[in-house]
Length: 53
Image (cartoon, rainbow, N blue to C red; front, side, top):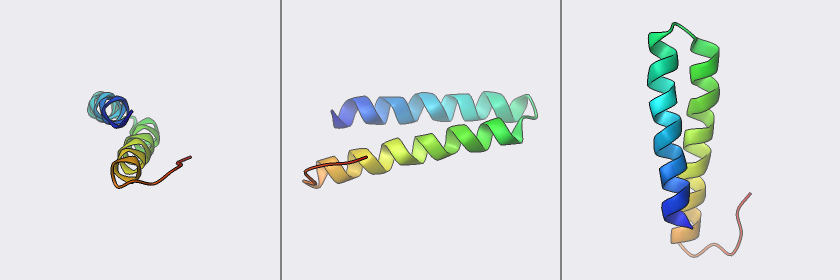
């Protein structure tokens, strides 16, 4: 499960780069939020947390 979450975070970061190139700061911020959320969720699961949002 952690690998899937990290893959999602990577895809979101790729979207951030594209949105920034298109001068869409709001969209980039939105995708950056989800990238961080998925990466943090993966870290919690890796560390042994029994649940995540």
